[in-house]
Amino acid sequence: MVSMRKKDRHGDGDEDGVGDVVGGQKQGQGGLITMPFIFANEICEKMAVVGFGTNMISYLTGQLHLPVTAAANTLTNFGGTAAMTPLLGAFIADSFAGRFWTITFASLIYQLGMISLTISAILPSLRPPPCKDGNSCKEADTGQLAILYVSLLLTALGSGGIRPCVVSFGADQFDENDPEQKTTTWKFFNWYYFSMGASILVANTVIVYIQDNIGWGVGLGIPAAAMFMSIVVFVFGYPLYRKLEPAGSPYTRLVQVCVAAYRKRKVVAGDGDDGRMLYENEELDAPISIGGRLVHSHNLKFLDKAAIVTDDDNPKAPNPWRLNTVHRVEELKSLLRMGPIWSAGILLITASAQQSTFSLHQANSMDRHLTRRFQIPAASMSVFTQTSMLSTILFYDRLLVPAARRITGLRRGISFLTRMAIGFAISVLATFAAGFVEVRRKRHGGAADPISVFWLAPQYCLHGAAEAFVSVGHLEFLYDQSPESMRSTATALFWLAISAGNYTSTLLVSLVHKYSAGKNGSNWLPDKNLDAGKLEYLYWLITLLQVLNLMYYLVCAKMYTLKPLQVRPAGDGREDSGDDGQLVQLSDRV
Image (cartoon, rainbow, N blue to C red; front, side, top):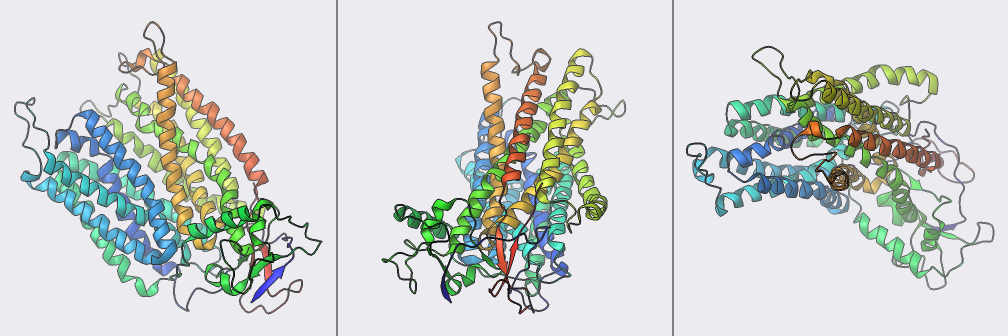
């Protein structure tokens, strides 16, 4: 049905942000029964990534005998590539392959990379000989490095297809049109992140221990074997999955809206009362609006010109580079509105990134002994972060949500925007406390008379709690508020925020190191002796930036317009204001 409709005003809608979804699921498909298959794939992928990446510097320098600088650059390049590939994987899934097949083939590619790495760690001919007398070390030759780089590239490409699709594919299994499944979607994000955190915890302890004490062949072979089993289990669940068909390239549609709006930039838009019409075509939008049509919103009005019908347009056979439907215009608006909220999550990653750098250096200069003979590895302090994150998710799901539900009346207890705000506030406390711990460490005598490493535990735990609130809320926000045909792309933005946060940390540390240098050789961040620096100033600088970021986020959340969705509830034949559907604004305020 083709229609041209005056600009609509959206209503108040459902208070807890969950709208009804129409179509897209056959009887008996989807639901909780699919979760073991989906989680198995994600757990093994994360265990493989973390189990290898955490100790990668040791493998490159100890087994391949690369210089520290070359090894660090290799890891940086690998990390940057792995952070960008989710955008490619999301494009493939949303455009033509679908999420199931993207995950399946990406897992196979990842498996090839892991097998290649494991073989190179087992066969002596694929790595240089051991060092003689601990000094004479032969670096890996060109062929051995080629195997390494190909293996890393395969794992990066595989991760790019798995990361953006698993979380979206999992959430797709719950039909919000079914009352029994309607409240399950937001729980899925909690348990998805919980399972991911648990696998990271195992990788940082068991897998790393095996690599250091038993051997790299076994240490890499276990994640490779687990990845193979996860593929088998994931594919075995094929008949049970709810699979939504891809609807063509979302990026092309976004560009078409921009081009159409620019070409009609001189067309004068009406105010909604002068007969100016906006173009709608339900048949054209059917493949990208299974869950309901996006209706007109009253912001970013310059994009509305893409939906204005002129004498040069043919509404029956529209040229998308000149004329677009309201739904397609609102797809672009939704992504643009999400931008400020998305960007607020970057600084949280910047703050937590210090745990694996300067906090690790602090731990190395502190008393790590549990007994006279046994001391905790500095890298194992991350166990506090993971344990805190997992505990917070359990607390949130089992205690906080039921209690908050009685107060707010929302099915999810608190909104995802509120959840993120709480996490940002906790992260401020983490870096603020970290500064005072550093002051105490140096005042007590620094490395010469070290204090217990457990003084660092509170900041690690606070970072874990902050991650449980912000990261899960961030994922939920991106999935819930993105257009339904772009949910893999929206999930890829989550990983892009992590990449941006790490790069921001690198930039911040570089600038502080450069501009805090004194004429007498002093520096906030000295190259060698941490006791001679002012690391606490860096922590408090990050604290200040986080306070400003929290204020920025609260303003953005207050002004945020949630996507208005017009749906047709199953079995509801009533009319609403003369229309066939029911207008629902996904309402979720701080």
